[in-house]
View 1 (cartoon, chains in turn red, yellow):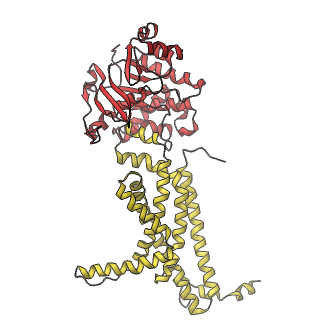
View 2 (cartoon, chains in turn orange, brown; view 1 turned 45 degrees about the horizontal axis):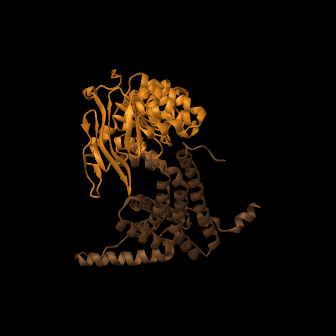
View 3 (tube, chains in turn blue, red; view 1 turned 90 degrees about the vertical axis):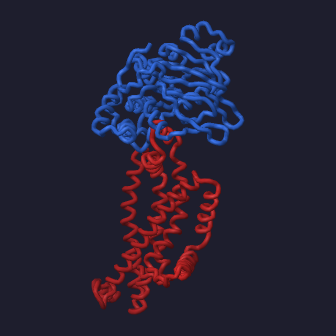
Length: 268
Length: 243
């Protein structure tokens, strides 16, 4: 599963480990949400993260790009560890804002509630990070954005503002925005949970298409059947720890832990 | 009919050149507008800083800002203007004496801009604070996730994102600023209301001049409304119309 994919030119992309999470702890006040999670995604992996609500799966994903600051632990992207320092209150904070911004541009997140910038058109949303963060010339960014819009089936919506689109269209636009930074790793945080049931399919189709072309993806999802189809590795989180992980067929057909068995029984 | 209108008032008193007072009124209007624009801009700078301070500042800064917005909004503007104008210039002169320099003559225009700015700043702080909070957190999070710095997030996402929520409040404050300038008449700034009173007093045509001044204020408001509508339409471009 480590087929090279287009869109990443840097030499670092040859590093076999796209994402390494080690010993991740996260505490919100008294509540310990993550209790030491370690996880490795190789380049080209599609890792599905499943688990009940409150199991810490979204928190873990959000720690990878430091939208949530871990209390303990380390994150490496393509072998480069994000520099952290104590924040003086028992947690960690980024030690090097420049490094974090640079690493963030190599990751791309797709959010549950899309989080498109409402005052920009669909095209504006897609070219925003390339032009204003990465310094890509505007013409070039627009040309690339048009190809991406074509790919997610939104060519006719390029000059429309997000509020005028359906949820499924907004999420496809958000995926195009993520692709525009030519990410080395894509992070999907429950990308279909906010969608009406009839709109889920169009978004899953786009994600499956990306998985097929060998992109490295971490996907937090409640779509169990979909996770089984697209992922090559499934991680089951429960109570802030990885309870079980492995290839989807093994995890789904022969769950070893009682909790996973119960979880699978309730969602299927 | 024409005779009647002609006899209604001594229209020639509105001529631009003396003995007409038209030119004086227009000059007064120019001063009023300068104070309004200047004070409004000073207020906007205070407002952005105050709103950011109230939302993201430490406890001490937040308390200081609370005292500022509460005091300024609690005291009648006329009292504030008298206080800031006389006490402000007095304090400045004492300070100048203290450092050995002679007393300075502060122009009414600059003092007026300062006073209106302080008043506007308190109200704009509150309007902008509300608008900042109306920007969905997810949009700021997305901006950070795509590598923007704090300044970029403010400039590219938060400021344009809050604009539709701020425009109605800010527009109101602009209209208030244009009329608050009239209060500066009490401290002798030669703005529209003061020169109108002088014109009326000299010629005894009070009705004529105050009607003329009223029309000038109305014109400012009408032109402002056209501009505000445009700005609001632009700010709300990403929002579906609510009918």
